[in-house]
Length: 405
Image (cartoon, rainbow, N blue to C red; front, side):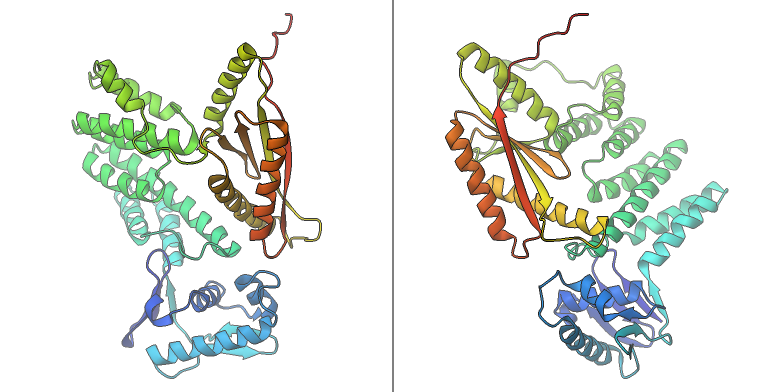
């Protein structure tokens, strides 16, 4: 029996020998991706074309069939060196598959089965046991260092969603039982995977209130607010507002502070560098403040809209792959904005494919120049010419007049 771990540090072990196949012994992310793709599709014959699309972008290799053949040779060699001589991979015309003789236990399969088992159990103790085992298996996101491939990202999102659901379900069960320390342990594991989950932060604060850790609860309330505001531009979600009210009623709210303390809390701790990137709700408030200032001073200021689109010369095989490339493009666009915009500029992600940028003290001609430089930088980083940036800009407008009722 081969046991494969993909939810954390990648490794393969066998009941028949002491060898371990891991990142250190493979020494190649490509070999790891190939092996895991074969494992996830075991029982199926996989065409060379499908495997090539799973491993490389278009035009990334001139001879995908040849490159794949070489990888298969290297993978077979690594498996034989670690676990001994036997047939691991079967070659057929234009396709490959794992040998049906291999007994394989894949951690993601066990994880999904435990989640399903928990949903079927009526007995609370049995449900808790299944959820505990599932959560214990989840040490990190699926193939977390290989998420540049669309199939890894899709699978990772699915397993992450199941994990967060298991954390919420088990936390609710422990809170019902007033097992606050157990609940806190599970919540902290969930937050180690998703720090911007406001529901988990609220659960953590409730658990700490339940066991009398009011000071820890107050500190975590502030941590939750800071993290959610920094990452998402959310000042107070419904879940966080609820626990904040609970703390205030218990007398654990914010105490009086003098002017110097308040100023210190508001001041950035590190010297500011480059563009200020924030959530859209924060951007909107900054925009409105700038609009009021400009109306008073009689000056012009510009806002720029940057949209990542699939280029006319590329047609994605399906919507998932197109979304995957758009996501990569948005990450690259953020890097361009961070490296090219100035202190005082403000940028925010408006949607899955669009950034919006406020450019104070910038003439119309300067705005055109900024847009051209961003587009040039983005294009130079896109070697496969799959994506383009569409840029629009206009003046910051004054407040809209109220409509007659």
